[in-house]
Amino acid sequence: MIRAKFRCNSVEFRGDPADDNTPRTYVLTPVYDTSTPENARFTKATPWGELKMNVDNPAARFEVGQMYYVDFTPAKG
Image 1 (cartoon, rainbow, N blue to C red):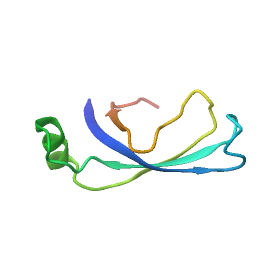
Image 2 (cartoon, rainbow, N blue to C red; image 1 turned 90 degrees about the vertical axis):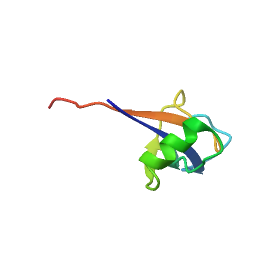
Image 3 (cartoon, rainbow, N blue to C red; image 1 turned 60 degrees about the vertical axis):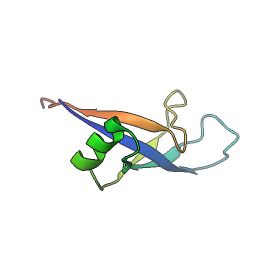
Image 4 (cartoon, one colour; image 1 turned 90 degrees about the horizontal axis):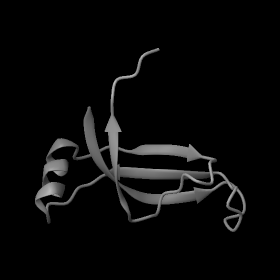
């Protein structure tokens, strides 16, 4: 498994922002911050990039400014 740490930078609503069922597009970028030992480790491992995803599941929401771990594990077929 490979773990990365990303920060949600923006959300774009694909309809009415007041409607919880409105699909959203999130843009997350790797944490680039050396203020804590953990963040410094992630900064060294993944200094740049972008994760952009469309989400239409009301239960799967990301908050702008919040950091999230992203785990990569191999998948079969």
